[in-house]
Every structure is written in C-alpha cells, then in structure tokens.
Image 1: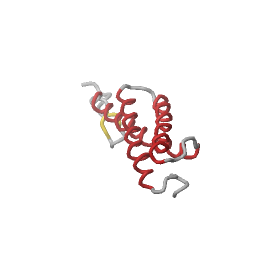
Image 2: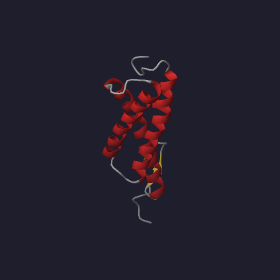
Image 3: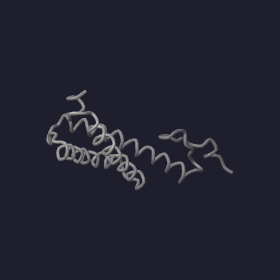
Image 4: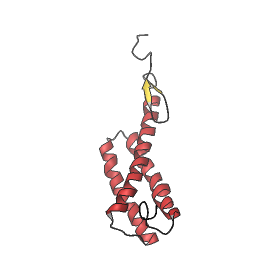
Length: 121
C-alpha cells in the first residue's frame, strides 16, 4: 500500500495524521456544519481546505511531499468520508431531538417520519 495511500516509511504515520487527527477534525467540521444548519457544499469547501492542512502536517513533521495531487486526493477522500459521516450523524440526532413529534431515529445516520405524525390528535 505504500506509494498508493501513503508515502511515509510506515503506515502508522499515515493512520495517525490522515485518519486519526484529520478524521477527527473532519468529523468535528461536519458536526459544526450540521449544528448550524449550513449546506453540504460549504462542508465540501471546508474539507478541501482541511486536506491542504493535513498535507502540510505530513510535510512539516514527516518530510513528505507538500504539493502532490495524488496524496492530496487520497487524504481529502478520507476526510470527506469522516466529514459527511459527522454531518449525517449529527443531522439525524438534530432531526429526532428537535422534531421528535415528526421523526424517529432508525439508525446512527438515519431517521424516518413517525407513523402518527400526520394524524390529528
């Protein structure tokens, strides 16, 4: 996998920076976008910038290449996954707590309309 997903000497550096640190930042960015009801296109813009930050951390701490499209795309795809997962998880929680009379949670990332939501009382 070295050369395809990461360029460092060990996979642990890639996992630490891109998955653990970058993934946590992307999750929190998705959470912030969901909690403030921002559109997902804004989340995409923030994750693209976050991909540059992760590349810089690889470059500054572990002497990786700074300006390489291949590894930027790899890091950004991973960050997009975490970012959209964080956004969807928090949006599902929002919809089922703020509008509990309309929606019920069906999983960690999904919700559905209540069966009795449209019926008069």
